[in-house]
Length: 96
Image 1 (cartoon, rainbow, N blue to C red):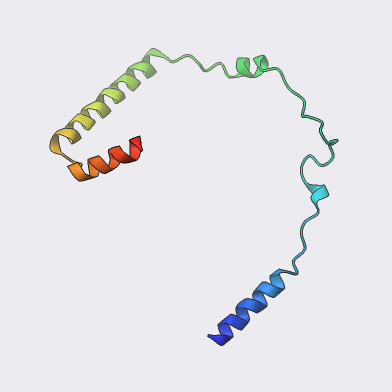
Image 2: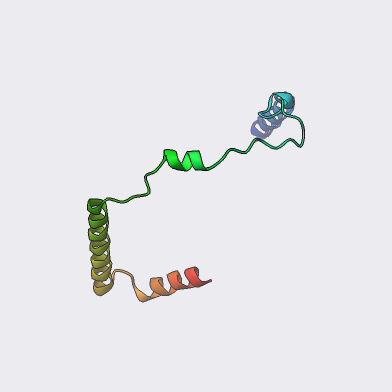
């Protein structure tokens, strides 16, 4: 036990002698203090990712998946997968 304490104190002592990296090398250190980064217009970025449209096939597949998940949830509720004590604890966690 004494040997372990000695080794632990020695390790802590040696780690206190570690050098820290230079803070001047931190990102943004070359920038003047208080100078905010340049702002870019948002429109070119939005035009570049014009993937906001959902195809009819994707919408149909998503609706079918949602219906399947709702049916599965109904089956789990019907078979009592969660006992009443657990359900009360979950409700308390959600509302509390």
